[in-house]
Length: 418
Image (tube, rainbow, N blue to C red; front, side):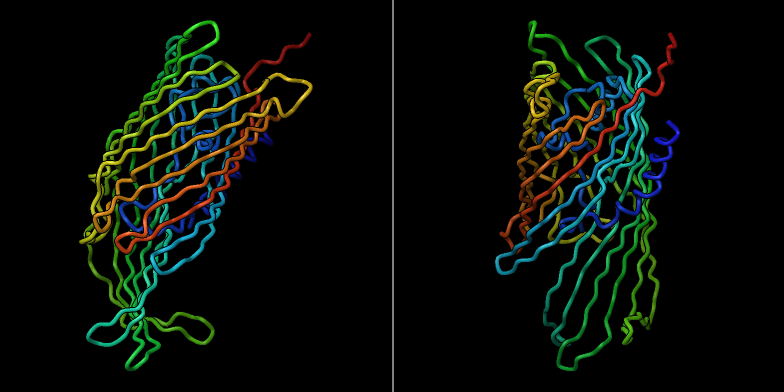
């Protein structure tokens, strides 16, 4: 047990550095950044479906699931993303490896608890172009990086065999940097670069509430349903802006001239309220199929600094459809019959409107749960598209490979000596 605790502590210390720069999407510039998936890899492989609790699998999207745990559970996951970007005239590629979650679940009879670390949003983009104004031809680059992480602590109680209620509190924190630079190309080329750098330090609390309900339809089939609700909350920001002229020495060292700090307003950023409803039917330890819809009040989002004339926000909708199948969970003769086979589909209007175009995200998923005693390795594959090439925008075609590790152990049972 001590060795496992040491491993968990080491992961908590190391993971915040992995959580940085885990997106390459140009759409991460807006609002709070690209909102990351809130669940574990098994839920992602079903299109984001999370309507049931599990006795040995930690589910993170609905805190009511914590009371279903029968084993102390340690879960960690990450994703490797390969993305092709294209406009009507250009194409680019990017690859990122990102941290998805790190969590511990603890069972106490009808009560369950969990705590951990997850990324909430990520910022990571780079856009380059040339243009001409009254001073000549110029090269411009805008880029940004940073993240908002969240530490969470939640608890759940199983009121009856059919109903579980849960709640969690989350503390958000992180830094985001945005750079905008211009270089004169002609008529008189210069090595000096004009740079505007915006920096935001973000922190604040939020909460989430959930309920799980299940009942037998007949001797074989079970009805599952879930509700989660996250009320609107606010993040405090400490904003700063720096205007400077930059040059680079032969050894790559940055030389700064005409450095000026500009006063900017520290504004509160809104984490919009969100509600999810899900339902499905299945046979215990054999199969499940279900759907879930999530509604988010993204219309209340604002940018960290000045608003963009061509950008607005709208309420978003996310729909997940998916399920799993286990040929024979207790098979002794075939390992492949004990594998959990998953598949799903997602559709999301992410709530961002640019040049009068609503940005949408589509994806299909497949995945496999590979049992290892009380533990499990989850593999997931996702193929999707975000954005459009219309209205001078960027289309992202992405492929994600996700890996999750779920370790289960009996930590709090009294040993019996015959």
